Amino acid sequence: MERLRQDDPSHVGPYVILARLDADSTERTVPERRYLGRTADGQRTVLVCVPRIGADPSRWAIEAEGARRLSVPRFLRLAEVGGTAGFPWYAAPYTPALPLPAVLAAYGGPLPEETVRRLGAALAEALTAAHAQGVTHAGLSPAAVLVTAGGPLLTCFGAVRAAAPDGVGRAGLPGLDPGCLAVEQASGGRPLPLGDVFALGAVLAYASTGHTVPEQSELPPGLRTLVGYCLSSDPADRPQSAQEVLRALVSPGADTARTAPPQDAHPVDAHPVAGTVLDHASVPLPGRVVAGLAAQSAALLATELPSPQRPFAPAQKVH
Image (cartoon, rainbow, N blue to C red; front, side, top):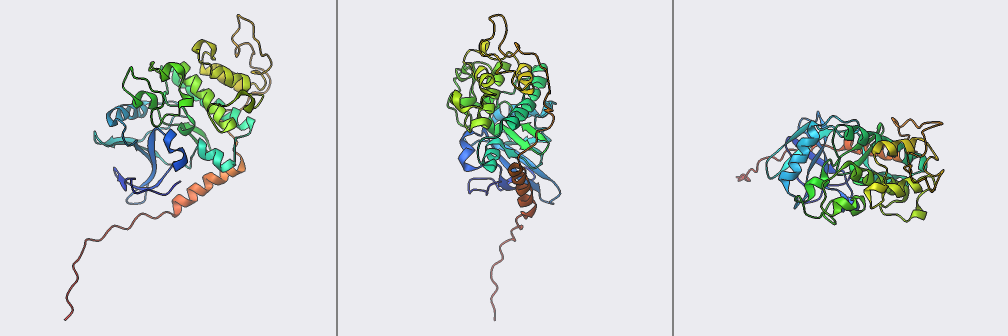
């Protein structure tokens, strides 16, 4: 939760804007402006999002409406989409949530491997459900992951599609972390599920090291092989589905037991899921992250709505 700046709106639709969700230090890799807002009567608090300055509002609005129609586990559920052609917005019910970069800041560095595995498994499960419906997220990045006490939520749906006209290269566009863009998408290709797999690998890398393009030696030994395969420039060398990534994450050691799989076996499929499977429905959070969520909630509760400005009244003459 960050203080508002002079260029931030005071109101969006029926909501009074109270604070920004994202820190200045991470703003360049967030594909939309995200705020915490409240109705004028103080009854409802929401996460409300608008396009970045300079973005094409019509393309952004199309993706927002598409997100509103989705029903995918762990995708942020939008309650409203509104606004005008030049200033669209969407809103979702507020729950204490930290973007993944803020989670690492609250923890003081990269997350423990088990936390990364559980977080990644929950995201992989969400992508598996989306891909089964024929939906590509096309916006997965550290900024798109909101961590709550109940597990992660995926936001920024369709950010790649909304970022540039069809057929135009998307590398280096404002609001998109280039480390999360698969080669085929960075060169202007249509977003496909294997692009989401690449982005998931980048998110796992970020949670483990603090950046999306790590050296192999920086990654925890138990995740090196899996993340390396996810970040392959050739889609054929990646895990061929989010389900494969999920299986590797919930079977500790499966992605490192063999460094050179047979020619006829996929590197992730080569290891069956066995032993203790992680409960990826929950993601136990380190105490400092829980404290960060509590601090956000307390700060928001303590934030008062601005007092309505009284109409100007001319000074009266005193006789």
